[in-house]
Every structure is written in C-alpha cells, then in structure tokens.
Amino acid sequence: MTPAGPQVLGLGEVLWDMLPEGKRCGGAPANVICHLERLGIRGAVVSAVGKDPSGDELLDFLSGKGLDTSFISRNDLPTGQVNVSLDDGIPRYEIAYPAAWDAIRVPDALGPMLPGVRAAIYGTLAQRDERSRSAIRSVLASLPDPCWKLFDINLRQRFYDAATIRASLDLADVLKINDEELPVVAELFGLTGDRDKVAAFLMKRWDLRYVILTCGADGSLLYDGRECFVFPAGKCRKVEDTVGCGDAFLAAWCASMLRGESPRHAMEAGSELAARVAEHRGALL
Image (tube, rainbow, N blue to C red; front, side, top):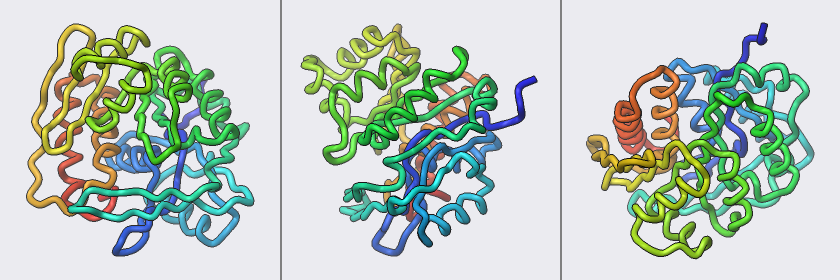
C-alpha cells in the first residue's frame, strides 16, 4: 500500500518576498501549494531554508498554513529573499543569490511517497544552481506516469536559458507561461509567427497536453493541440498588486483537474482565484 502523503509537490524556491509594506512568504511552488491546501488538496514543498532565524520563521509560517514542511531541508546558506518593488501594482523582482533553495536535497522520506503524487509544479528559477536542478529533475523523473508535471516557467532576471527551458519541457505535461514570457521563449528557440503558432510549436515539439497562456487583465488562453479557448479575466474590484496571481491561477487549475472537472472549468476557476489574489497585497489570501 502506498503510504499516505502529498497529492501535489511544489519543487523549488521558498523565500521571503520583501514588499514595500513588509515581508510575505513567497516562491512560486510554495505559493501554489499554500493555495492548494486552502482548496482541500494535500500538498508539500520540496525546498530548503537556511539555519537562521529567517528560516525558523518561514517554516513556522508554512506549518501554520497547514503545509507539510518535512521535505524542506536546511543548510548553511541564507534563507531566500526577494526584494519586490511595485510599479502601478506590477511587481519587479531583485532576487538574492545564493540562497538556501539553491542547494535543495531530496529527503529519503520522500521516495516512498512518490507513487501517490498526482501532480508536481516546477519552474526555471530554482534550477539556476546545479544542486537544486539535479534534485528537482531527479524527483520529476521518479514520479509515476499518470502524474501531471506542470512546468510554470516563471522567467526571472537572468536566471534562465534555452537549455534549462528545453530540459524542463522534456519532462512536462503542461506548460504555463504568460504573455511577456512567450516572446522571450520564441526568441530563445528562434521561433517566428504569432502567439498561436508559437504555442502550437511548443505543444507539438514537446508533446504537451496543454499550454496555458495568461495575459493579465486580458484574460487567458488554453491550447489543447486542436483548438485555442479564450477566457476573460476574473472580476476584480480593485487591483492592489499582481504578486502571485499566476501561482493562484495554477493552483485553482490544478485542483479542478485533479477533481476530474473539465479544462474549461479549470481555466475559469484559475481566473477567479487570480482575481481574488489581485485584490490583496502579496501572493496569498
């Protein structure tokens, strides 16, 4: 019998976002798992924090949110920190390097849990260092075939390249990308044409089940290899900031799909949760 464990793994960075009004828990994989817990889906983060008071505080915060922190290791690097500035609510990031999540290790206790994992979320940022890159890819390669492997590309600063994106797509079932990142990927791979052509190429070349393209206030698109479906943005009373909106979108999408709901319903759920997060400061409700 497979031991009881997380249904979804967030593989990668966990850190403090240093916002103008103070620090908030951040890191895309951790944000997604926090939202999934609120949506009733058991998850866990595979990451690392430092052996410092900041790491203590971060683990306490995540535990308080109901997250399983047993797969977050500790090391002698400082706990991750990102300085976030806002320009009309749009975040700009200054990411410290090195950080504890650059040296993720895979705990032995995770191995027996992998057969029960139904989805895993990962991006490019935590693969900027070979140590974490190897750890993340080893987990992905060990997951069962039915598991959804969701590549939330998350291009940040200079911490990505074509080789990392290509290798990540090799392992993916789903690509989530935004309208600013798609042209960057197209240029890295020498692709021409409009966004539909670029998405079609990515789907075919990497045999993806879906490509999700988020476009902020302009809504989102879902490509399934046959058609492109367009969805409006969720209704937002007032945008406070857009930090973590993409993470919220992916969490709601993932939860809907794991419950057997339609891709259309999943996209609508993602739009609604992203809009709710935009109404608040920081990535979490």
